[in-house]
Image (tube, rainbow, N blue to C red; front, top):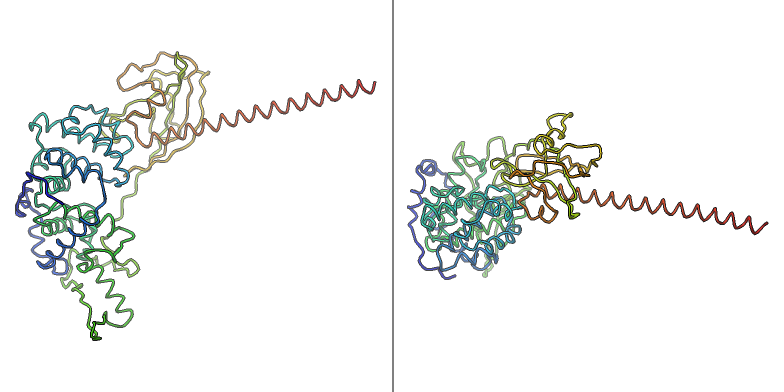
Length: 493
């Protein structure tokens, strides 16, 4: 792949200065050989990985823009893609990315957008603070940095809100050709298997070593392709549950793979071997897979053992997640018919900070006890007093899992029969049609709630229609019998 012009190349040692304190220096001087790379391995890994990536990389829209001659377009496109890809699958991101770039093709365009527009565009993608920080960063670049993105990882990290060490490394290496490593979930998995890192992958010690290895391995001539290759390998070959070791370009340098092969050999009570052309037997080369450091901080904990049935999937070690807290929230879908006979729904905007900040939703209230009732909230916040003529129905429950909350929405619908004097003149409260609602900045959870409501409404309508049909049919049958009886009477007479 030809290199874009005007890229800035920085020596590897520059990366050590991107952090005010390089925490990796002390620990990395003490790494056991089994967990480290030698110079010959580094050369081969660079060569094999870059070559593999250039032949096997997926055709993704942001990779095309990352080679644009315009350095600002390159950096902007990489920035948007990397933020969207955080905690989100590639297949999901593609459509969102294409729509985003079409609407805001440059950083200047994004800076002019409102937060409401950004939230609407991000609707359904999750982790909404990402979109907000993108827009905040774009505004800062335009208003304070003269419209020019920072040109290295250190400045990206220090100048732009929401840009962490990983994102800074991705932008700097891919867009600017800076020789700097990066570490994400895919990279952690690949490095853990290559070097038998079985300790808690989220620990400070392990993270320091991952960054040390990433900066040590990165190709000095093609850092962008190398880093993308490392992530691509983790995403498509060295996967969490179904790794395809047979096609891995780094199989020869993977100690987790060697460990599996040694175990197979021990079980078969014979040495790994193959037959040369002249018929002689030679032992297969297997790298040292035993750590001789006592109480090594990168090996499995003493209480844990290597599981033969898992193979390379023993690495990295999975950390038990904290159980998500349980929450129950009552949600009211309040509807009315306007003067033009259009059905409208009441929605309200969430606070600008916290979970789902700034998004729109149906009126809701956290259930704190069994006696919790949303009636008072509807009155005090929205000016809605429920009269006896209101049609109030239970819709059911909808479950939505956030990263740290197991949320159950107890959904009910309220149909207002007259136009009341409400408080919808507030900026954070409005009446909308169905189309307006679906085009608003709403969360996936609210979409699920509305879908349950529509399904319930359709079921009720079908039931009532069937009931009327049944009643009508019964009445017709009864009338028919009566008529037959009268006719018979007159005939007999």
